[in-house]
Structures are given as structure tokens and as C-alpha cells.
Length: 83
Image 1 (cartoon, helix red, strand yellow):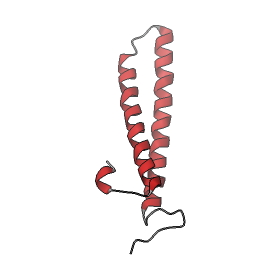
Image 2: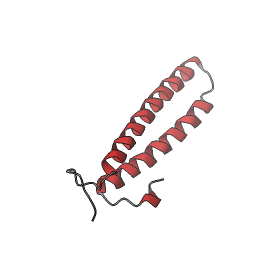
Image 3: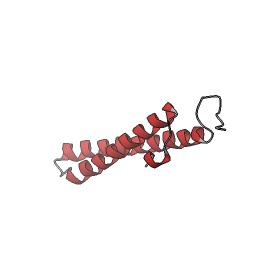
Image 4: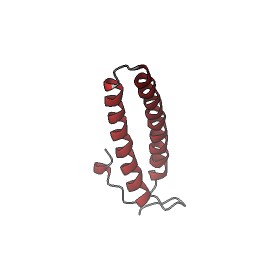
């Protein structure tokens, strides 16, 4: 029998969803900081290549976490697709 909490998510999925939200929040802060770094470097005429590459990586991670969160919200959690 599949246990569900009051939100309709499978047992344990609520905790996973909370973890994903926390991870997305942390990554969003890091992206914001990198945007600030890029803006400052650009204003000074410094090379922004490294910071922009880091930003691309973080944006990719945020997108993957967003996709994972969407799957968790949908309730169809296939553990093989979470990573």
C-alpha cells in the first residue's frame, strides 16, 4: 500500500520536495552573486569569462532541480529519473 501525506505526495516525497526547494534556493543565491560579480567585472573592464562559465553551470543545475521538483509535485516519482 502506498502511503500518502495530506499534500498528495507519496510518503517521503514531501521531505524530498523540501530538500529540492532548499537546494534551488541556495543555487539561486549563488547565481545572484555571480551576476553581481560579472556586472562588477564588466564595469571595470575585467574579463568575465570564468564567472560566466560558472554561471552557466549553476543555471544548468537550477534547471535540473526545477525539473526534479516538477516531477515530485506531479507525484510520479521514478527514482531513476531524479538525478
